[in-house]
Length: 282
Image (cartoon, rainbow, N blue to C red; front, side, top):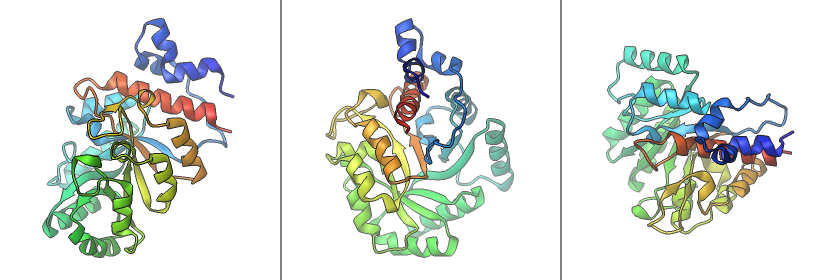
């Protein structure tokens, strides 16, 4: 049973009241025992959160956050990596108790870039690519998906660019294509575009393969990423919908605030997500 005290510890509120950093509270909080009621979805980190860091310090932060799944970015594992370099990369993740479950986001503007991305995913040994393709290349990507059995999740980018700004734009583009083509649902960008990420999670659930977990300051282009507990998206309602639709993929925290020193904000977000999940679990 989740007590009020354990909830406050997990959300970092107790740490704030004590004058210490949220990451300290997370490091010292006892790990709850697994139960039959544990959720199907898995908390992860989107590699872009570590844009300013090499792999070793990124993995150290993941250790402090007690998060064990990573969507791999090419600045940590280049597209040109050799077989030996890929093996060494996976060993480094293994030593940190982290699993790389997908790659991307990757921009793909030519057939050659698409070929390279699928070859990269195959060599890395993952079955999910998060991509940003051109609409006219979707039939070619569908051929690659069928040939490789690698799922392809298009990332929506909000009002910043016209290409795939929201969940609907992605769904409309892939709804008649192979069912292994879907969406990496960036809930923050979806809200910045003016849409409702909770409603869209339900509406497009069959094609959502990955989630970029974030909150934002406003439903406008000017909206910025912020800690999960401090934005305008109703995170408890989002978690409730994850359960309603029985989502069993990853919720990858993509933290784009304070990117040169993100750990405290990431810890607050991770703690809030876990605290809300525990407090609302039946």
